[in-house]
Structure formats: C-alpha cells, structure tokens
Image 1 (cartoon, one colour):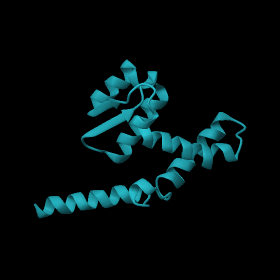
Image 2 (cartoon, rainbow, N blue to C red):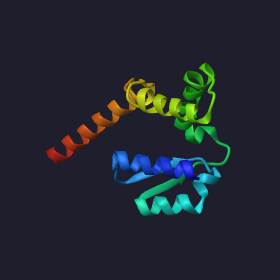
Image 3 (cartoon, rainbow, N blue to C red):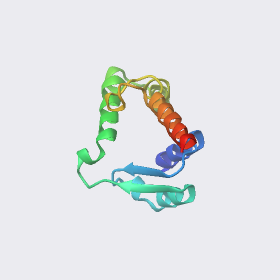
Image 4 (cartoon, rainbow, N blue to C red):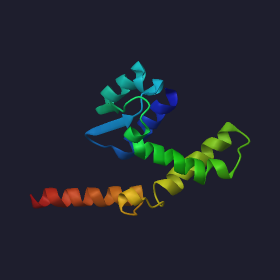
Amino acid sequence: ADLVLAALNMAIAQRRPSDVIHHSDQGSQYTSIAFGERCKAMGVRPSMGSVGDAYDNAMAESFFASLECELIDRRSFRTKAEARIALFSWIEGWYNPRRRHSALGYRSPITFERQEESAESQNLSNA
C-alpha cells in the first residue's frame, strides 16, 4: 500500500483537486485501512470496480497496455531504481504532458485538463 499512498499524496500535492473520486480495482492496496483513512483525511471518495471486470476500469487497462507497449516491452532495466526512473519519466515527461489520447479528443491529459478548467471557470464567471 506504500506505493499507492505515495502516489495519492503526490497527486493531491501537485494538483490540489476538489471533489475527487479515486476509482480503482479491488486490489488489496486499495481496500487497505491505510488507503481508506488517507482518502478520508484528504477528502477523496474511493470508488471500486467489479471484481474481474476489465471493462469496468477500461481507462486504467488502456494506460497499462500503453505502458507495456511503449516502455516495458522496448527495453530492459538493470535495477529497480532504473525502472522507477524510466517509469516516472515516461508518465511525467511523455504520457501526461505530450501523448495524445483519442478519448480526450486527441489532446494530452494535461492539455485536456487545462481546457476543461478554463471552460469551467469561464462558465462560472458567466453565471
């Protein structure tokens, strides 16, 4: 559960979101008491998919398929530290800021999020 807690902490610290729902599978790290308590403390509502239903979490399945195809299958890592650095670089340097996604209208996640936030704040100011 430590990795999941660290990822949740990083996401909350970097993005400072409000009214967040964290959707996951029913893995033991997500059903742990520590994860539930951290979600509660941070105002995050946990949501879990059905057991054994890949379609229930299609976006996560798509992410991991891309990760395998674009990073893991293309190289080997000598150490866990090297793999961690490569994974971080792939997510933060490529997948989130630059990789275009068909589900987001062929925009990167960061571009999509910024445009959605801009449209939302514009709607609030027009209300």
